[in-house]
Amino acid sequence: MINGHGDDIYGKTIVSNFSSNIYNGFDVSELDTHLREHISSIHSYPEPDAASLASLISKKNNISSENICLTNGATEAIYLIAQAFRGKNSSIVIPTFSEYEDACKVNEHKLRFLNLLSDFDGNSDLVWLCNPNNPTGKTTDKLLLLDIIKRFPRIIFVIDQSYGFFTLMETLQMDEATAYPNVILLHSMTKRYVIPGLRLGYITGCESVIDKVRKYCMPWSVNQLAIEAGKYLLQNDFPLNIQSYLDETNRFAYELDKIKGLNVYREDTNFFLCKLAGRTAKDLKSYLIDNHGILIRDAANFRGLDEHYFRVATQSFDENNNLIKAIKEWI
Image 1 (cartoon, rainbow, N blue to C red):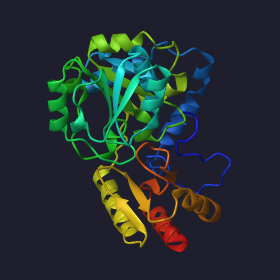
Image 2 (image 1 turned 30 degrees about the vertical axis):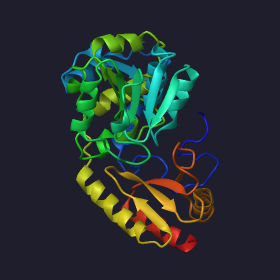
Image 3 (image 1 turned 90 degrees about the vertical axis):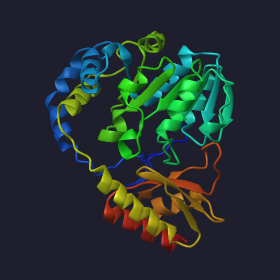
C-alpha cells in the first residue's frame, strides 16, 4: 500500500514529527559527515548482495553470513517472504503494520486475522507478528513466543523486530532464532539510527529458509550509500539511553492521559496509541499541522482500529510538551 503510512511530511511545514516511530533528536551528524566523504562511491555499482555488511552483522551477532539476507528496508523483506511462500495460508496478529496484509494479498495468500498470538490454533502455513508491535507498542512475552514456536514446528513464524531497539522487554536474539527452522526475524537499521530515507534492513533465520527467500532478491537492492552507512554504524558506537527515553515516554503518556476526552494506551516502547472520545484523529491531525506544524499518525487505517485512534512516538521533552499543550487547546 503506497498511501496511508505515517511520516507524510511532504508538501507540509512540519517542525515536530511524532508520526514515525523514531526519535528524530538522535545525533547522526557523524554519519552525515561520513557519507558526504564517501559520496563518490555512488558512481560504482554496489555489491549485488551487500555481502560485506552481512559479514559485519554476522560477526557482531555470532551467526553465519548464510543466516542473513540484506534488504532495501524491512518492507522489502516482507514482500520477499510473502513471495517466497506465495499462495500459502497466513495468519496476521492485528492491529499491526499493513504491509504484511498487502504483501500477502499481492502474493495470493489466504488470510486470517488474530487478536492475540495465543489464539493461534495451527491452521496456517505462516504467522506474521510485529514484536514490539506497531502501532500498539506491545511486546509479546518471549517465553510465550518460544512455546508457540516449539508447539507448531511446521508453521513459519515471521517476527518483525524492527522496534526491538526501543524496548527493555526481552526479544529473540539472532543466534536463538537461527536454531529454529521455522523462524524468520526481520530487522531494521532505519528505526534505530534515523535513516528511513536510506532504506536498510535485513532478515535472519536458519540457512534453508534464508536460501528460500534469497532466491527472490534482486541484485543491487541495497544501494551503495546504505551499505556504507550500515558498515559505519556497526563499526562505531552510537549509544541510545533507552531507559531515559522510556522514562520520558512514561511522563509524556501520563500527561496526555490527563487530558479529558483522550485515552492513552501505554505499552513497552517509545510509541503508543491514543483514542479520542467522540472526535476524529483526522481532524486533530489537520489542526496540529495547520496551527502548530506538528505531525501525528492517524491510525484509522490499521485493521482493528477506527477513526478515533492516533499514534505518537516520543520526541524531545520540549516537543512533547508542545504537543500536549496543542491537544489541550484543540479539545
